[in-house]
Length: 380
Ligand SMILES: Nc1ncnc2c1ncn2[C@@H]1O[C@H](COP(=O)(O)OP(=O)(O)OP(=O)(O)O)[C@@H](O)[C@H]1O
Ligand SMILES: [Mg+2]
Image (cartoon, rainbow, N blue to C red; front, side):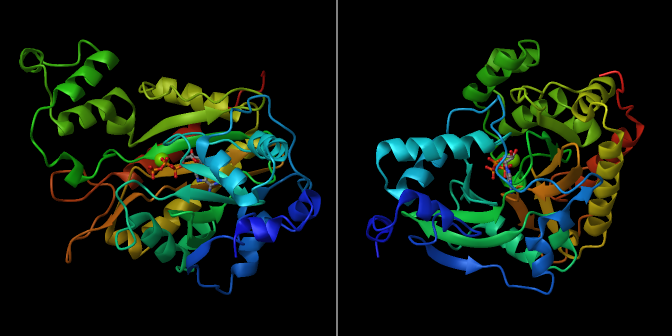
């Protein structure tokens, strides 16, 4: 059945009223895999259980538009227009309301979009295919783990829609009103060993390096006007706090403000602490709740069998709070890989080629210590 034949018979209003969890697009897509329902399924549906709440119950109606609402991404347009196949004005209205409640903070522009109330779709990474989809495999394994599933957004399924594949995930922003949001990329190493195995020096990476910092290349690199991928990636890590602290703040969004996405050069501990203090504002209860949640994620991670045998590169901790509740989750498993048989990773040791360490817990220790030490600015 096509979307049009199903949708044309219902009014826009009733159609919108019929949207269930998982959203707009059930009619048209092919479900490829579904997360196995577990005992805690109910808990996942009652999103309150996933947050640390100190205020009264958050209102359930749609949030008001934050002033920083951005132009709908191509993916959002694609999903909304293709799903509904309504006339242009209706699609525009829908786009406006959906895009005003939702924003993608970091990552590849347009790689995620809200698909229905309470869910987002994440586009499959370029180069992945049915037989090689590390992010899907990671979400499936973690969602099936009775402990780790509490540290990630709810994973619903992988699906195919109009020839493209997506993962359907819990929308962590759902129900928040103009919250404080921060994406922290974890680890001292943020690239896969495979990505840097090519030792050819590349002029394009030299150019990128010079654009970021003309003094960064050595005399020999200036002479060759080329650098290797490993050199370029490590330069990026040293330029940010990744190399020293094992985490970097990718982006922050404060209520009523546009997202700050140009934070990759925030490197020194004082600058990091100031950025975190700004993120927290005067909210001491949020700070405590976030520290507690980060400790919980660390405990889960440390006792997870999965993470003893998987490197977790380029993943983020996504932190959200408003006046009533706070939460933090692990997201982005596009570069999560099983290590070779017999190998083990402790996530704190220094990386050397072939040991698969990425420094995730090294960074989480420091992030927690910084969140504990930072003083919430009550004067703001
Ligand atoms: N479950 C979610 N709920 C709400 N927002 C999300 C969710 N997952 C991701 N996001 C938003 O999308 C941004 C990017 O997410 P993510 O890191 O998974 O994608 P990416 O970096 O583009 O992906 P990749 O590294 O796989 O190419 C996050 O900073 C956040 O704003
Ligand atoms: Mg990312």
